[in-house]
Amino acid sequence: MAIERTLSIIKPDAVAKNVIGDIIRRFEENGLEVIGTRMTHLSAAEAGRFYAVHAGRPFYNDLCAFMSSGPVLAMVLEGKNAVLLNRQLMGATNPKEAEAGTIRAEHADTIDANAVHGSDSAENAAIEIAFFFGDLDLHSRL
Image 1 (spheres, helix red, strand yellow):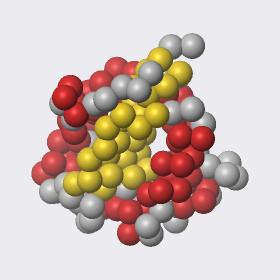
Image 2 (tube, helix red, strand yellow):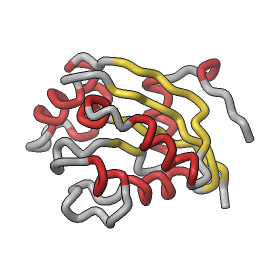
Image 3 (cartoon, rainbow, N blue to C red):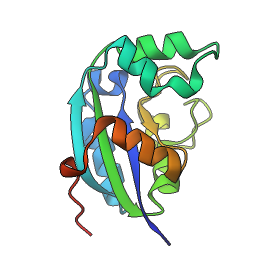
Image 4 (cartoon, rainbow, N blue to C red):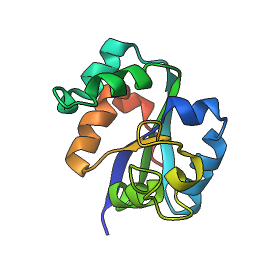
């Protein structure tokens, strides 16, 4: 199993619900280490740049508006197969389809306000991490 890094974002809905600690606990209890964090409030333009891969899709404008509606907590997780493990812990994008016990099943309300974001590949993780963090911001504990 490869040691990887992935980006996780606790979205505005979950930040507003004050469930940051529970979400981080789930990552740590499942073998992922938090090696960098940043609380920020994205502007609509920043959210647009981050989600540029979705530009032109019907949900893009709503996604950017939602992601700029309140503070988010961006973090880098590190561990064995971190990308896949993070996605398993998050659960399906639609919380109604998310497996019981996953973050989205527990903390998300809708497919739009779905509590967390996670990188979908190691390649995208590197790009997404660089959007929020520089090398000096990350502190591996492995």
